[in-house]
Image (cartoon, rainbow, N blue to C red):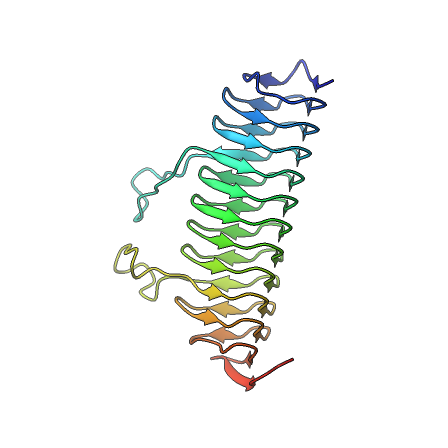
Length: 243
């Protein structure tokens, strides 16, 4: 039996069994909610959002945000007005998920995290508190991204990658001075099993090889070979086969 507060706004009939919708939550028409879902107070789910079974969404989360900026954006957003969240996920307080995002099963999205349009996140992945994932980014399965990391648009993170806290990435060597060019604006590519140390910075278009290690505070300006360990500013190889 589902439990919906009299103070919630629920405009959809597509709600599974044993669902809890707390006071002041807003669930728009066309939202699909699976079984055993818990929606805490002040959550907003926009039309086109699909929530899998046994998902918990904590207070203040906003799912289905339209990407727009009145005359301020150099890149015109493209998106499909849908969000799909897999079964067993946990969406933290005040997390914001834009339209055109898919998240796999049993993934944790931390407090205040922001996920932009055209992003795909795999299963069994952790996105830490206040992490920003920009547009058109692919995050694989079993990835761990720690708090306050900033991921640029147009980047890929393969399975099993570990990214420590406060890591920065970028996707435009012109720093916005030449306007937006999809072909030129490419973020880093991080191959499977790589590990990025706290506070490191990965510059546009760099590729981090499989199982490589980037030391804390390193600034990566060129590709890192597979299994290499790099450190410093700019980052240089200190071990060709770290482990």
